[in-house]
Structures are given as structure tokens and as C-alpha cells.
Image 1: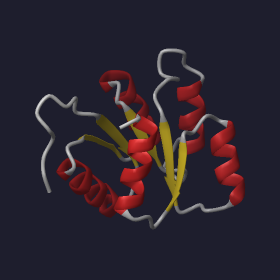
Image 2: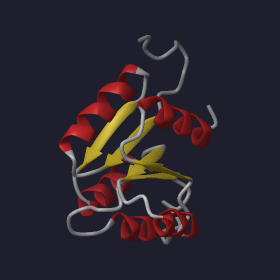
Image 3: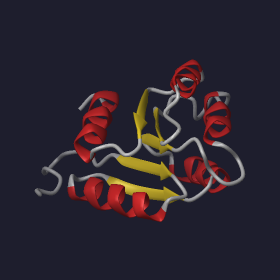
Image 4: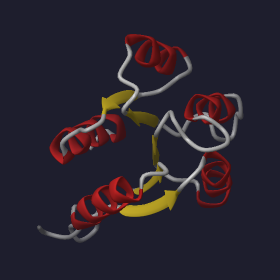
Length: 130
């Protein structure tokens, strides 16, 4: 896979997910496509990374240890300095209620696990305007 194009701004993606296999798969595939990846295994760590790193986009699981993904989303959208960062929910909690609730809270997208990397990249590009 080709790396980033010369002159292209490298987008920083934060994945907040406690599944190590998903962390590894998503990171390997997105880095190969020219993105910079940050990883958090729980909501609290994720919120700290958002504050310090200011990612261009967040991929967020709903079921996390400690603070739930929906509570992380509420916290982000309730903070005026962070609310503009787009969030794509990526979860095995496929219920219509979760998708609707995520949209109501300001999520820019919703993926159901297991998802294909191509589907993920397509949503990333749409949300980031690439």
C-alpha cells in the first residue's frame, strides 16, 4: 500500500476501543493508508488523549470499561473546544437504539462490528472530506 502523498496533511485518528485485536487491525490498516494512529483502551484514557493530541477524528466503541462510549461522546460534544472533532461509533452493539442515540448525541457515523476496513476507510474519507 502506498504511504501518504507528498504535501498531503496526515490526519490523526484516535481509536478508543478495549479490544486489542481491533486496535492492532485498525492501526495497521490505517497507518498503511497514511493516517497517524492514537490508541486508548478506555474512555478516561481516550478523553485525556483528545485533550492533549487534538485528533482529526475519533473512532469510538460504545462498550468500554469505566466510562461508556456514549458518555465519552456526550462529554466531547458538551465541550466547546472539542465538540468539532468528528466521532464515528464503531461497535458490536448493533441495535437501532444505539445508532439513533449516537446520532442524537452528535456522532458523524456508525459502524457495526465486525466491519470491513474498506467500509471504515470510506466513512473516514466521507467524514474528513477527503
